[in-house]
Structure formats: C-alpha cells, structure tokens
Amino acid sequence: MRRIADESVIIIKRTSFTARKRDVATAVISVMTTIYPATPIVTFCRSVPPTIEIPGSAVVTGPQRALPRVQLLEHVKNATVLVTWVSERVDRELLDAAGPGLRGVCNFAVGTDNIDLATCKERGIVVTNTPNAVTEGTADLAWALVLAVARRLNVADRFARGDEYAKIGPLGPDEFLGLDITGKTLVIVGAGRIGYAVAARSLGWRCRVLYVARSRHMDFEMAPIAGERVSLEEGMARGDIVSVHTPLTKETRGLINASNLKLMKRDAMLINTARGPIVDESALVDVLERKAIWGAGLDVFEQEPIVHPRLRQLDNCVLSPHIGSASNWSRGMMTRMVCENARAIIAGEAAPNRLW
Image 1 (cartoon, rainbow, N blue to C red):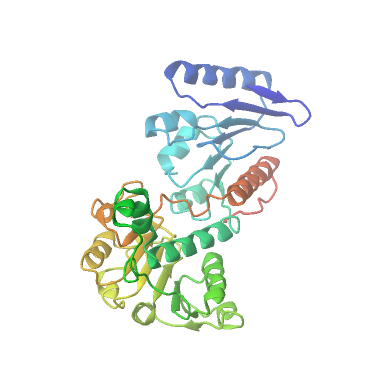
Image 2: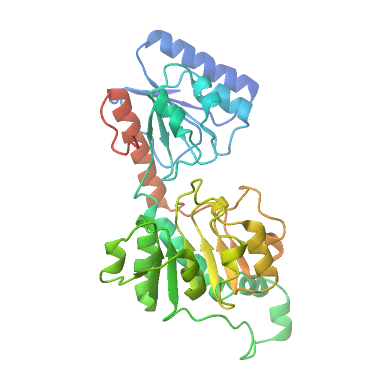
C-alpha cells in the first residue's frame, strides 16, 4: 500500500492473488476503512496503463489476467466504484458481491455488452464507458487487417522466417500475389465514430464508400467521404472490403451469417474489429475453407478468448487477440477517462461519459 499525501490517494496493488496475499490486502482494506471510514474505494478488475489518479479515494488494482469468477467476486467487495474490462460479466451476482455501497461501474471500453444495464439502472448504479478514446486505435487496426489480408502478410511472414525461403532463392513474379486496395469499394457496417474513422482512412486508397445503418448519416454522405447508404445485403454483394463496426445487441448478434456471406464476391474480404458474436463464425469458416471469399481479418471472436479451431488452420484469415484499442495513447486516454468518471461519481457530480 502507498499513500500519496498531496492527492489523498491510497493505492493497494493486488498483483498476485495467492490466498495469503489476498488475505493481507483484505486486512489492509479493513484497517484503512476503519481509520478512514468515509474513504470511497475504487476497485479495478484488471491492471491498466499508465497511472491511476483518483483524488480522495482508495484504489484497489487488479491483476493483468482475468480473475476466476470466485476470486473476482471476492475482489470487488466493498467497492464504491468498479472499473471493469470487457471480460468481466457485470450481472446481479457481481453487483451483489460488491455490496450496497456500490455507486458506479466504469467500463474500460466503449461497448457495454458485458454489463446488465437494466439492473444497474434499477439499483441507481451509474454506468460509464470510454467513447472516442478507442476510435483511432481501432480504425488503425482495421486497416492493418485489411492490408494484411489483401497481401497475405501472415503467410509471407511465416515463409520469410522459415528455412524454405533460403533454399529456393528469390521468389518468382507469380508467387505470393495479393489483392490491390486502390479504388475498391469499402462497406462500413455500423456508422458510428469508428466506422467513420475507418472510412476516412480509405481516402488514401481512393476507395468508394458504402455504409449500412438504421438511419442516414450525413457525415458519411458529405465530402470528403461522399458515401452511399445501402442495405446490408446490397453492401455484402457490392463490397470488396466489408468492415464491421456496429455494437453488439440482440439485433446485431449473428448479423453476418451464412445467408449474407454467400452474397460476397470471390475476391472480397470481411474485417471485424467490433464484437465477435456479430459474425456467425461457423458460417465464416465455411466460406473461407471453400475459398468463396478472398479472406478475413478478425480481432474479435464469437467465443472469445476461444478461437474457432478451424479458423486457426486457415491461411486466408489473419487473427489478432482483441487489440483494437491497444495503443499507448488510446489505453492511456481510457485510463484517464475512467479515473475522471470514477472521481465524478464519488463527488456526486455528473460523470462525463455517463450512459444514463
């Protein structure tokens, strides 16, 4: 435990969750709340970069890896505010474990599909997220996946690292051919901040932009994007690059499925940096195995962190472990946002990123 006198912050680090250290940390919290009975506790379920600053609070940090559910329920006890990651299921059980003093849940993410929002609202628990902070990093990764899939970078990287390259000598003109991106049609499924940022990046490749959304978005239709709103089916049929950026809801679960995947062109690709369950993974595996489309780039998975075993065997699929916002700037900004949201909740102020 360390105290920062000038900011009145008490930080308890739980980096190792052996039974003894967990008991020691619990004892420290007990003593601390006895000495400082009015001190609110902000409990982080995972470690976050780079610095936590929440004046007037006691901060309990979490480990780098996800805690088993039983340990997580113990970890959140007596929290005034919880800071959760996408892997933490915030349901009645977790809210009950935190106790009656819980006043807020600050999600370290823009999506909140891991949180029972209705129950939080029913109990008067404020819920916040981190919009904007994830936009640029996720858009960058979407384009990294586009280029990697188009140029078969995963296969080329593996080949260059192996012994075969040195054995066979310089490649011939007809080897490792990929797709061109310039002038192609980009389809954005979900016309939010990230979708717009991905569309804006396409200007460098002079792409035509189509977008799929429940309503018109004039920012997509005006210059410089100059996009056209289409139905999902039309977008899947016309697109060379279909990039998914819609939130996960009851309506979008399984949105990309066998019936619309079969509409895609043989040299088209699917990119998903949103949420895994939006795409029917088995249906996608089927079209990839049959080479009915060129390829796919996935940063998220239907049963995350479990990756479909057949996906792992495919060369026409580039995979990354949900790292869309994993840049120094993005994650640093997310930490500052959850800290400010937590501070506001504790102070009885309106949190900047409150969802209701």
